Image (cartoon, rainbow, N blue to C red; front, side, top):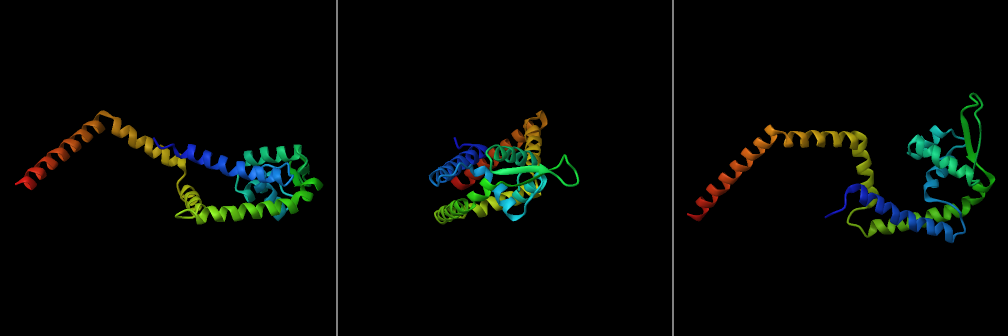
Length: 185
């Protein structure tokens, strides 16, 4: 039995993130792959609010909040009250986080090159397939697709749906038998 989509995606992430995390450790960095979208967002524009980080990194706000909290705890980021609204937090790279950037950029380049090597060994670049899947899900979410599948399954399992399926199957069987007799003649 082929594993489901979610299982395959989780396994792919484990394979990729595990190797990338080992590369960071080999470079002497205490750093997790999940920090990279936040770091890149802050490199592009800082200070940022959590919402701005989430938007720039293309992650959910709860994921951004959780990742930023971990990064603050590890001393990679600093947080300060917003200028207009003290409840809003402005996030920026800490001196420790900024000092890591040259080694991080080198690791990111190595990761990019390894990704290009992976793409070259596939019949179709993984990044292209992922981009197309994301675009398709932005048009119709996976939740909407599941709701439609649930409706189709409900119809197929209903008494009227089963009898229609039986009639279709019986009709197909009769047609196949008739075709066989014609071919045998």
